[in-house]
Length: 214
Length: 214
Image (cartoon, rainbow over all chains, first blue to last red):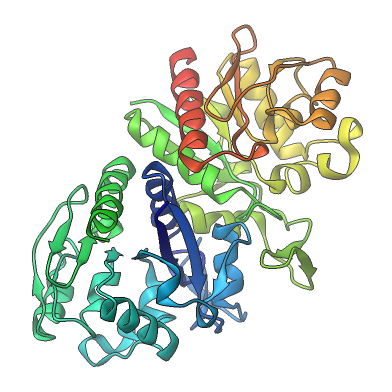
């Protein structure tokens, strides 16, 4: 049975992982008869947003603890996981990827990925294991890998991918972009305004493809 | 296009709505070509649990605000929604249903549903609109309606349903129980230890059936 690592970045798209994308990733993994290995960095979120009005609130929340709500407690500190422990890696989107796992939301092409996540991504790539990136995650991957990627059709973000030496391809929510050489698969998900079942199709294909490449 | 009300009870199964069940409900609604109308009571959670260790923490969180993380901000205070506004109602599970929407987790057969939720459930039933109940939600519905229900196979909980004058039927995660007369449909979801894609099948059937009955 294949084991699929899943990096979460909190719980809620404005300050953490996009919840729908995270669950649809777990659903796709289950459908493929694989097992998820959930992980998150044990760091505080960049901030906490009230999702009813988009305003930041004076609270501190931890990425690992909030992510465990999606994971039903079955989650590890990313520092306690090795790339040896799984066959492929998935990264659901949400602003958590751009605010907690990196500072991409604030620095764009000049952003950095936090050390524990960058180390994991490099180790997975070094072992030639596939990575599936959803929503905004492909743009963050572009900081490390000059890959063929999609984040849907957003011009500013696709320009950053191209500026970083990657290649952006426009795709629909129910489609994937595959970089066969680097074994990086991406799908736009909530970067596009699409019905949830179409987003689910894209994520299903993404998970299926990373398992196939593993 | 049918509109399906969805009552959320927070964000995380130990102190709020079961996140997977909530997302799979939204996915099923999207697949049926229907539109969700999300709502939650504007009340504080009974407590806040760190989902990595199951321990309560000294924090206060609001059910509506936390639910909005799942809803991506598209959610209303249940007091601002009328049963006239939708065609059928879904209630995903999680301890939030038994701790925030009611005190079922503490009082069992002697529990009460909070006024704003009880009022909505009665209004929906009075209008002969269907209700779909997932996981522990059917047991909470049993406080109001003597219905044919399933919560899977848990003996203590099914006994409470029978004690309340309902009728419990044992079902698998990919199955539903239908009370045609009361138009109440239920599926066990995480009350059973089943793979996520089987839980998704049960929720898909539940949503399909409530739309059919509406």
